[in-house]
Image (cartoon, rainbow, N blue to C red; front, side, top):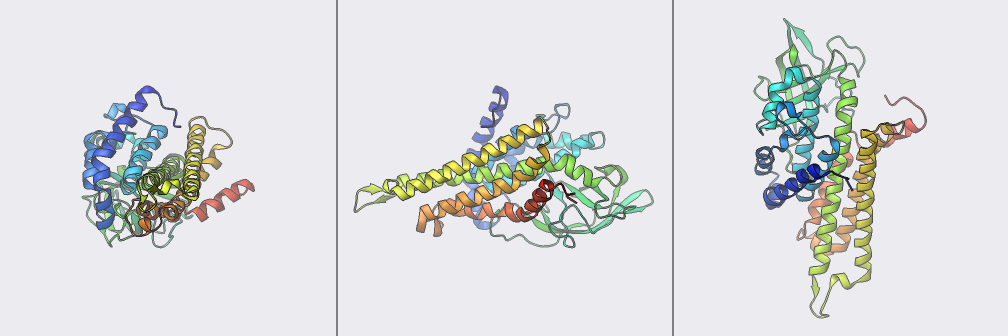
Length: 383
């Protein structure tokens, strides 16, 4: 469905093979132990995939959202936690690209597999309204000082670079913000809690505190007071489409796991398989239809982003919410189709059921997305 050219297909084939060999074997342990998928991220880095959207001039592949979504789809079919980590990295790199003159060495490091990025936006004070940080940067002797209480940071304590949002020193409105690059070695940056979640258990999405973190002013990743504009114009398409691709990948994995269970599990006393029950075949058919529908919607959004029209903003707003609802519906059907085997965690659809629920509560939540979409349809300002 992604309509890739021959070179792009080669990238996806490499990603698929890597996911089979380096992600899938560890996925169950990553989930059960709530541990960061170090082996998988290292494999992605060694294969150059941390440079997927790094421009070629800095050693990367120079790919856009279409290929990124296809890669995320493949990765998330094997391990959704790895998919989320990777998606946040791509979002961070998108910010680096916007200021490539000052981030060149980090782009080059990412292309070599030596730099994992992420976003640090949500704050305790503004909760899921990530676009309105309550923290505020200070200028002190030419340096920028940041004190903030971040509530969810994917790859917390593991990433090398954090795209941190904070209020602009001269700002008065919540959306007058800044984005800065904070490095793991900067003093005052600390993980302030643990991650033990219902789903996506391996992405280390823990809280972090920044306590008077001092960085040079040239680490700004947005123009003065324009962090909000960078969030919407640079990061939002990658974030929305990437999240949607993860959800579609989870749904696809549930279809495959359910198909395997229904065709392999037998009624020994009847000499038949579960797939011979019409009601279970019907459930599987619904899963297939909904997954195909979800992927088709995602591709329609990618098309619109590549060739913008009046509908593009609305479609981008829809992407994450639509795919999230698809994944939740498909995995719910899968749980019912696989019955006790799923409830007893003997088939992977149970993990996919839990992972699917993460996107709906990840800011912007599905409820917030529906509000944005409704306001847009009614001709109202979104913020």
